[in-house]
Image (cartoon, rainbow, N blue to C red; front, side):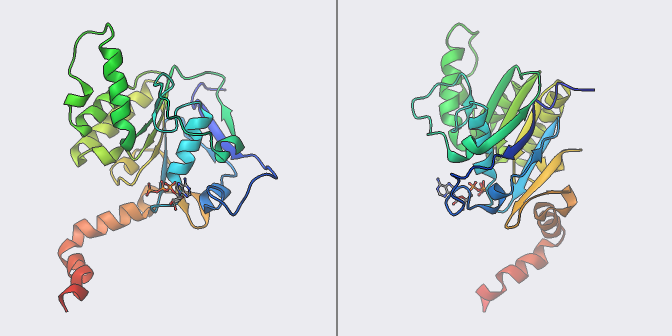
Length: 244
Ligand SMILES: Nc1ncnc2c1ncn2[C@@H]1O[C@H](COP(=O)(O)OP(=O)(O)OP(=O)(O)O)[C@@H](O)[C@H]1O
């Protein structure tokens, strides 16, 4: 049976002789390895070391979906839209027969611009509520997440950057409810809390490319788990040279 979700089923890299494999972004091992990524209907997670290419791929997906590269929805008009990247042009998207009702690309750095826009449309006829700019970074971020409902496709770049551990747990629950309500999420994250999303498909970006992995096999889980269980000893080992 063909299901409506995932709205974004797969992405692959179209072979193109014009690609310069020695230049950014194709020089990144994970980007070279986008042979085919199959997305989960609910939640797909990108994990990997800093600089492994998660944001690059997520941003290219956003642009391929005609979302602004800086983060926001298709309705968030801004003049500083980035030039369409060579990577986006090389991506071949396999999409559902059903279009999601809303799409959003959210990254922590661009929240200010997005909130300014959301405030401006809220002021335009909507009942008065607290301004996004009056909420804290994390509160405002969670407000945006809470608005994700029914039949949406959402790309989130390190949502944990704005959130306390308690709010990350809240975000996990919101995502779960939204997924049950018909939403699909693709999330780049370092958060051992968000990575625990049950049943998520986790793709590890590293020097050898992209591979599917399990939560407990990620460094993020292993290092956090080990550190919290043994932190006095780990601190002693980590800082030993500084005391000599
Ligand atoms: N416009 C650019 N030109 C050249 N190199 C770039 C550009 N943007 C990013 N890079 C490099 O590409 C690599 C991948 O960056 P990217 O931001 O995609 O990594 P990431 O996995 O999202 O990292 P993090 O976890 O730190 O957010 C990094 O080495 C980065 O310095």
